[in-house]
Length: 283
Image (cartoon, rainbow, N blue to C red; front, side, top):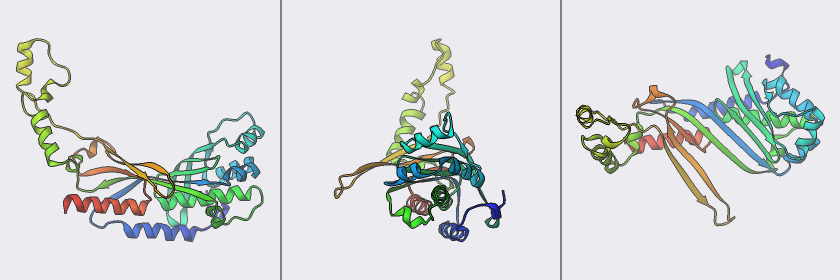
């Protein structure tokens, strides 16, 4: 796929956005991008899709991003009607390829329909946002409208983000627990004769069970911590729930000071969240 053959623009804008994100990255520990999502709710997107040439739009997404349409339809005409009535189209298997910038980022999922546009990439918010801009540009181009991103943004009523990173932070899951809770785990789950000894499957024969229990070693493993942030806006009456989670990318990260952190923040704010967390825990 050659950049010169693509109907895309704004590569300098993408470069500046990536450089800005990089400027926030810490130098004393590593943050690896796993996933970034950006989504928009636009009050004119349904109309825009109804006016577009959906066949041309789908083709252009394939040509420029190698995106594969996953939504089933009996014919292009049927898909055109369904989309104009608010049905969502889903795409997968794409790639953001900008050779001049050394970017080769998988586009995990693109969905567009009704009032919603969502882009998920195996990268950062800057890349997801840029893909979204190009998707809207290609949509407008399919019915002969000159694209200005500002025009689309003027129709947006809600925007959201999610960022997932594998973070070499020097903190394990148990470091996020209170000292009292860690004492409870030690006393109630680990020590011989504690409640932890009653968990799981056991030998039925009493003598054999007693012998086996005498050599029991238990280690609490905390693999995932999930939080929900409930927010209510008094001025508008709107409420929402946001997710923060601390997981594991794989067993190799268990107790290695590596957490997979998920927030509903853009990449820059996500990095700041991790910095503040690390400072709070480690001092």
